[in-house]
Image (tube, rainbow, N blue to C red):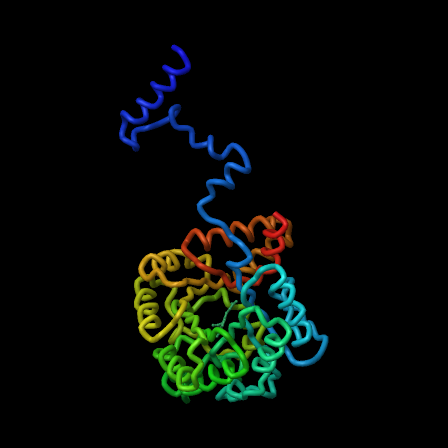
Length: 350
Ligand code: PBG
């Protein structure tokens, strides 16, 4: 048989069969995996530094950097050093950072009042970063846990129950002082009902119409937050758990309702948290709403990766990039990750 005839036969073999019947040797799936450039050319998903958001922990002082034991490679930094990290992130193409404070325990009380102080650590950090790196986006966290002696995200009653509506009144003020300081995106992570609408109207009344809201909409009561609570010094203090406001990890469908409500209340972007163990939720939400959808690759997930790689059991760089790609594949528009700078360096080099 001539070459032409055999090609002809191959084509009619393939065309003559239903797609599902086409098979080896007419079909060779490995053909498009045979070279690096080919794999690259047909890749369905990509990860770039512009998909990443860097969370940062800030502390008082000057030239202060405190390692966080449960998060190797991550430090709490004073504002001057945080600015250097932010510049580095900006130079690598990371579009935004998310700030979290570790405040002096003397400033904590049961109502978390320091959260609404316009001169608090977060507000000063926002102002300083805006001045030093004006073109990076600044995301601030709205929740009371770094400020309360009991470590909860809101006010509590005598039984320790977290009060919804009373908490919202404080969150409004917290969001407003952060916005006045220059925050670009307000990210409520507290899971109180109705807080998105309350914050939106507070911002609009003060004419902050372009300050966006990234809602932690589907936030689960997860054990993967352990190292973070360490980082903001809220761990030892936390009385009980957060199961009366954060979602039950057993649930899937209720995340659709949570996201729907936040969108109705004015959320511009939504988030799922934690990340890897909840990629099914990310996919559900992206498919259902087609909204800008983010996920938080949280402290415990990062710690697992670090711990295994420090033991020589996993290749950190390769697993980090694979992890971040899996978020993109699930439908994420962006990922908050403590590995943002590491990943961006790898991607810029590649
Ligand atoms: C609390 C908050 C938490 C995280 C971000 N904001 C912890 C919690 O809900 O207890 C966790 C982030 C991480 O684990 O990396 N408002």
